[in-house]
Amino acid sequence: MAAIPIGLQNRDIIGVAETGSGKTAAFLIPLLVWIQDLPKMERLEDADQGPYAVILAPTRELAQQIEEESVKFGKNLGIRTVSIIGGISREEQGFKLRQGCEIVIATPGRLIDVLENRYLVLGQCTYIVMDEADRMIDMGFEPDVRKILEYLPVTNEKPDTEEAEDHEKMLQNFNSKKKYRQTVMFTATMPPSVERLARTFLRRPAVVYIGNAGKPVERVEQLVYMVTEKDKRKKLINILNGGIDPPVIIFVNQKKGADILAKSLEKMGFNATTLHGGKGQEQREFALASLKDGSKDILVATDVAGRGIDIKNVSHVINYDMAKNIEGYTHRIGRTGRAGKNGVSITFLTKEDSAVFYDLKETILLSPVSTCPPELANHPEAQHKPGTVMQKKRKDETLFIN
Image 1 (cartoon, rainbow, N blue to C red):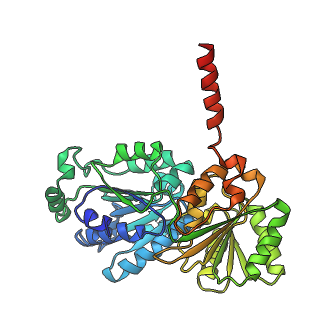
Image 2 (image 1 turned 180 degrees about the horizontal axis):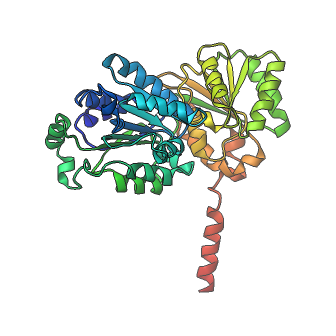
């Protein structure tokens, strides 16, 4: 709600927002209004200069989810969307692009591929969205994103002056046929790499902060159990037998672990499926669809499912393996408690996870609906951020030597 009116003025936007806060609608609604004002692509020659808009997403699943929403909103307006992702034939995607479309939704690697092979040009692209920008950079896509942005025409760049912040002038341009390029970036955190990207490609952006960016949603109750590695499975079965409502997402850190755990749950009579980077595109789509339509109750997944994926009414997220860092944890548990609903996250901690004890304790203490268990709160490894005590000691020693 905060970003839509700004987007409708042709202002560049950086949205720093908590997960599940409606980011897709925040960039899609201004984008569809934008496209309606542009000349209709009636003939194939109109499509030769490429789409009016490009939306970049870090994973195939997120790209397809955005495509679903774009088709839902855009179909009745005659606005066509094509997704360009790995795992699907490049030729098939090239054929769809030649038919013409107003919006392309893509993962960076495959988009570079079709651009370099001339399946696609961006000669009339005036709207670019980078969704989950921090995740794209974490995954090593920064060079690809920069390369894609360099394919855009320079003729439609906004002036890097106060005019780019003038609401009235930007609104006049929004309503004209010769629009300045609009660049929108959504991110959950703002590390220096994301700031660098923003400084290079955005012009005087409005920054919209929603919720506690980078912090878990306040409606998620966070439960933590200190366990040994060999007790995890028994603890999980007890929880699942306790009668929790589906759908449930269980996160593990390795592909092989996901397959082994899902098979073991299936043998015990639970209705489980898996999602990880080692699966083919059709298998990944089928796994998500079966959780969404209720034919499966449990999704065992790696962090491929940790970002942006929206499955309605997920009651519990279970971290069978704790995430390697607190950002990963935050995104995982954001799969529940979405769109105003309450949710529960359960995390199994072993002594191998001690590097994140401090951050996890601090995160739980900030939650109005969660209680940090004494085993974590009083654990020696949870008393200070890893590395800080050593640094202080070294500093004292240096002062002593001097």
